[in-house]
Image 1 (cartoon, rainbow, N blue to C red):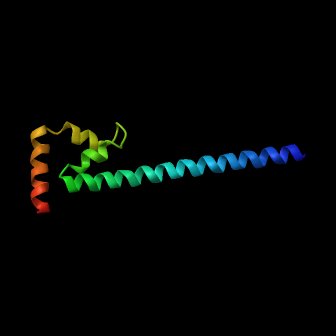
Image 2 (cartoon, rainbow, N blue to C red):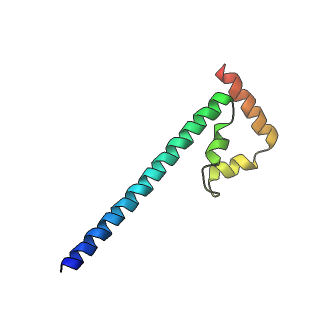
Image 3 (cartoon, helix red, strand yellow):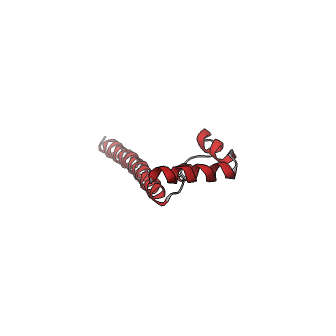
Length: 85
């Protein structure tokens, strides 16, 4: 009886610590992504390219972004930098 209770408590604690660890990991990941996007904007780098470095391969926005011609991306960066001024 006492062993069953001890095992149940240990399993519960391990599960809660795992859930907390995963949650903290994802919160920090999103925080770092937003910080890197802000840094990219301040340097004139396209923030979508920074966002796409954090996403999975199947992200529709990033697939579309990668399939755009390089001239289009260069022109959009020039337009974005002229708007900031």
